[in-house]
Image 1 (cartoon, rainbow, N blue to C red):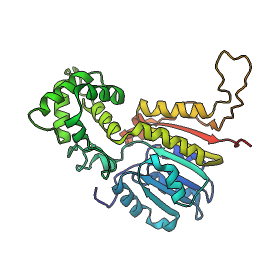
Image 2 (cartoon, one colour; image 1 turned 90 degrees about the horizontal axis):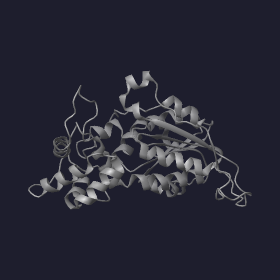
Image 3 (cartoon, one colour; image 1 turned 90 degrees about the vertical axis):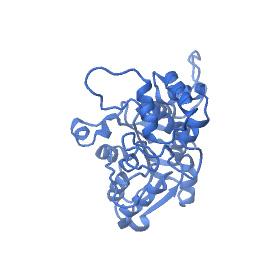
Image 4 (cartoon, rainbow, N blue to C red; image 1 turned 60 degrees about the vertical axis):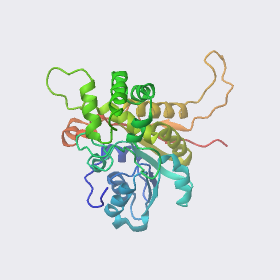
Length: 319
C-alpha cells in the first residue's frame, strides 16, 4: 500500500467519541488504527496532554496514519502487529492502565482499493487478504491447499454462505487446471457457481461472503478479537471505556457475549437457589442495544450501513 493521503472516512465518529467519553489528558488505545480518522479525533479531544497508542497489523496503514497524525508528535505511538498482541503493545509503550480502548473492525477505504492484496472485490488484484503480509498464508495459498470439505466449512462458519458446498467444489475443480490467484478470478468463479438473482441488481456482490470468510480465516480474526477484548478490559482503569465497532454478525456476537459475561455479577448454575460464586462484574454496559448509523451518514458513507457500536465501562476492581 502506498503512503500518502488516506481515503478512509471514520464511521460513527461522533457516536464513538460520545461512548468513549474522552478525558482531558487521557491515555487511549486504538486497536485498529487504520486510516487514523478516529485516532485524530480522540487526540484532539484529549487535549495537549493526551496520549494514544495505535495498533495495526497493516504496516501500510500505520505509515499513512503517522503522516496524517504527524502534528501530534510523540503523543502518538504505534505498534505493528495483530490486536492479539494488545497486552504486549501496551506494555511495550510503557503503559499500564489506560482510559479507553476502541476497535474499528471494518476494512478501510485504502485497503479496499489496494490491488496488492485483493480486499476489494470490484477493485481486484492479487488474492492475498492478509493484513500483515509478513506472516501466515495468503488466501490464494489456502485455496490451493484446502480440501473441498475444509473450504465449505470456512465459507459456512465465517461467511454464513448458503451455497458453500457448491462454491467449494467449483474451486477444487477449477484449481485442478489452473491456480486461482486474483480477486477477479475468484469473484467470477463464485458468481458463476451461485444461482442467478432475479429482480433489480444488488449492491452486494455474490462473492462478498466468500471474501469475508477467507479474510477471517487467513487473519484468524475471530480468535484475535476474543483475545484482544480480554486484554483491553484488563487494561482499563476504573471508569475507563471500551468501544467496539463491528460490521458483521460474527464479530458483533463475540463482542456482545464478552461484554455480557464481564457485566454479569453471578455465574452460578441456574438451578442453584443462592449465589455462592462471589463473582464480581468488571464492566457496566453503556449500550444495551448497539448504536447504528443514521440515514445521513449512510448516504454520505455507505460503508457505515452495517456498522454496530457497543460500549462498556470498567467497574471497581476486586479488593
